[in-house]
Image (cartoon, rainbow, N blue to C red; front, side):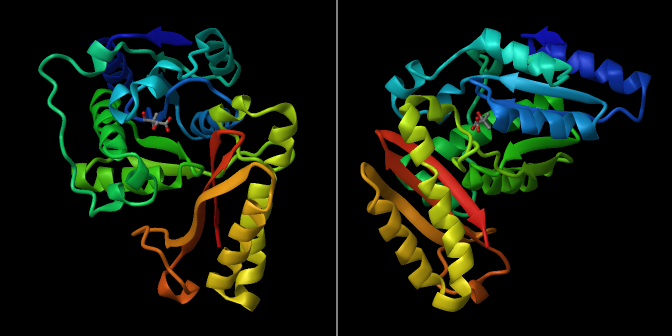
Length: 282
Ligand code: PAF
């Protein structure tokens, strides 16, 4: 695996590959490191479908609200490199902040039809604009045929699909299903902050949203959502931040499945002081 730290060298490397073989396709997996099975499933998917897979590890400062969160973000680079090699990633792009945001860089404010202000965006102002700016920059540097994102960050996948439309980019966005721990908890870099027991118990989140999928036809959407919230809040140490059913394109809340072509249930639960995200498509 090549490790490239310079944006211009990466662009040049990919341009040369493309000009030596017109059929080369580049798959891109953006990450912030602390890689786990969720990320490796994105790498596997890219390696399966493309001639070259580029993974970026960059803890993007513009998407963090609190300085503290940024400073404490885990950075286990040796483990990450080993995982990428094991999964046959071809190029690791490991830029510095200055490389991604050079002095002349000017942030863009993208009009995302308000999607960036809702749900996660409501408690993290500016977060999705930060994600859009870094992804726009990566698309400029890498120009991939396909970029891979995990379904776990559902709102992010909707935002990024909107971004490529705005940029009129050729890049296709692939959304890879959530990878789960054996008990059902969605894989996340934050799971290591849970106690061993908590990590097993936290399967109640997936159990609750799966139950919505089972119940909504008989109970109706509103009642099954209310039942899931009640179930989670009844677990010791757990508190629902939000749990709601949304239209998967607009992220508007829906009360009936007939209100949208496709409906997803999105949730964030505070458990043992950790914010755990999960979702399910109905
Ligand atoms: O999902 C993430 O890890 C980040 O938001 C991403 C897509 C790498 C952009 O910094």
